[in-house]
Amino acid sequence: MSSLFRSERASAGILLGAAVLGLLLANLATGPALLDIKAFHFGFPSIGLDLSVGHWISDGLLALFFFVVAVDLKHELVRGDLNSVSKALVPAIAAVGGVIVPAGVYLLVTAGTRYSSGWPVPTATDIAFALGVLAVFGSALPGRIRVFLLALAVLDDLIAILIIAVFFTHGSNLLFLALGVVAVIATFAAGKLLGRRTGAAGVAVVVMITVLAVVTWYLVYRSGVHATIAAVAVGLVLPLGPARKAVHALEPFTNGIVLPVFAFAAAAVVVPSVGLGELRPVFWAIVIALPVGKLIGITLAGGIASRIFRNPDPARRSQTLSMVEIVTVAMLGGIGFTVSLLMNELAFKQSEEIVDEGTLAVLLGSGISIVIAAVLVSMLKRAHQRRVR
Image 1 (cartoon, rainbow, N blue to C red):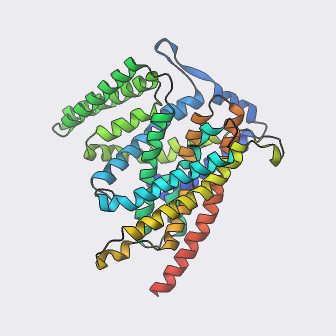
Image 2 (cartoon, rainbow, N blue to C red; image 1 turned 180 degrees about the vertical axis):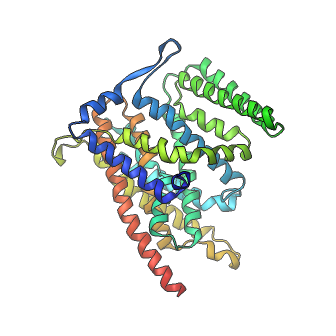
Image 3 (cartoon, one colour; image 1 turned 90 degrees about the vertical axis):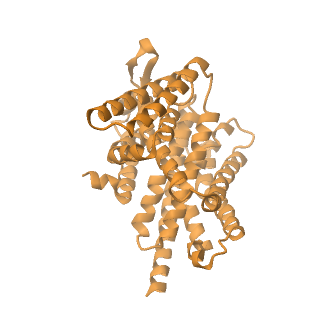
């Protein structure tokens, strides 16, 4: 069963199925009960933890996903496809283009309205979903396409993490924040001990790191910074070897439970019974910015960068993407899904109606990107197969 949840194809399918199920149940007779469960509060009020089920999922459970993202990011920067400036430059420029243009499209569509705070929503790319679509429809494609998409998506997630940390932090409690930093430093020190301990001593260190990670999450949550940033910090400070082992152990859980549960809960919104003309500008801005903004931004930035910084070594020219391949990756980049849904909740948390329209827009915009990307990847696969025959 764990091998199923490690599969990029299966993970993408489960994620999509969970979102569709959440949207469907929210709009049937089960809808009111489901929304009541999502809004139900429980926790530990005496220590400042009294969250709704929905927030336990987005602030707590989703932290495990961000831990995995942070460890993957560190791996790529230290040992992987981003471990040198020359390797990281083109996907980094493409990722920046894939953030700036969708944000600009969003702001253009919502100009003159009170919805400008939602500009981060269409800037995200869902790594798991994008790689899943590529795996399903393009299994025979050259590895350079997956490498570029992975590098692009990882850097995109780094930008998303920075956006969450900078733009969605309100009323910070400096004491809790300082204590959170101390907890991160303690986690780093405990991580250093891990490589020198085996047997029972090693298990004790793992338990200590787990406790410190939970404490870090709590302190960061109480500080006013979004709690998932704690998971990112822990993932970045732990030694890469043990952290990768932890990710390997967590992967079936994050792919099979964490992300589907979040997608289910986030997509559980009631479709507004209004005409298309009555939908707010935020809906249209996200629907347009995800597929169109990402396509234009990544294609232009990535295409220009790949030509300017083309590797002079003829032996490595085969690793340079063609414009058709860059366009295909750009379309895959328009699959915002998980992180876009989180951004939507953070940007519009003061208005449930706008969150609902934003959620529907993320699902529709990502859906458009999935369909077009699947067609492009399939066409690219057929063209590649004809060339190699």
